[in-house]
Length: 204
Ligand code: TYD
Image (cartoon, rainbow, N blue to C red; front, side, top):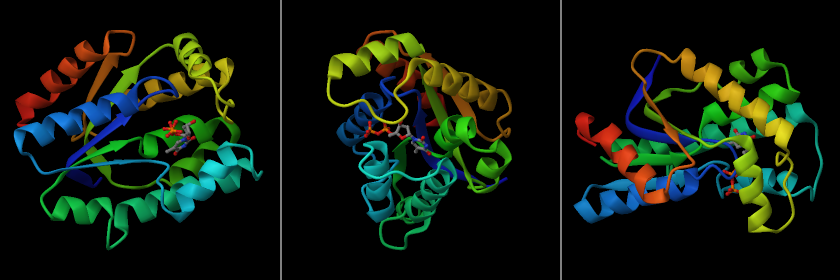
């Protein structure tokens, strides 16, 4: 099992606060002079852009096609020779990603065969995985407060299932992956402090 050193992944339900916390950590590294690259999935590259159109229901496809698109977006995100995560790591950056393959296993396994989802997501693991654990009910409230159109996966029952799929992944991580589960109901600052307290013993 390959592990990418200096690669930090944030995961959580829609509305859990992963984007806020990934950005805060990147901001902190920036202020301390650590070379850092902040990124996210789905990406804003061509395959990720196509995925976002599907999420907005501008185009429709099958759950399997969507699962394969997420996996394809991820391959490009990791290995693109110009902007890929592997290249960023090789250049000495700490890479922070808002979502990675754990999202695919948690979300796509609901509508697709989970062994297919796992097979097409046999990508290297990150050194650090931070799960911002916000209950599905609270996430739905936050999504509703944000306003705008609901996306494909913004449904309470669905998010409950997603959370349970995340928790089962956390139970069987390879030994080299350091994982933290942080209560996403806490204030933003407190979560930020917990993230740093988790990473700092490792020199991050
Ligand atoms: P999200 O992080 O919510 O993007 P943004 O907040 O910028 O719109 O991700 C979009 C949706 O895609 C979200 O519902 C989670 C889902 N998703 C998957 O289902 N599988 C995946 O592999 C990834 C990366 C995301």
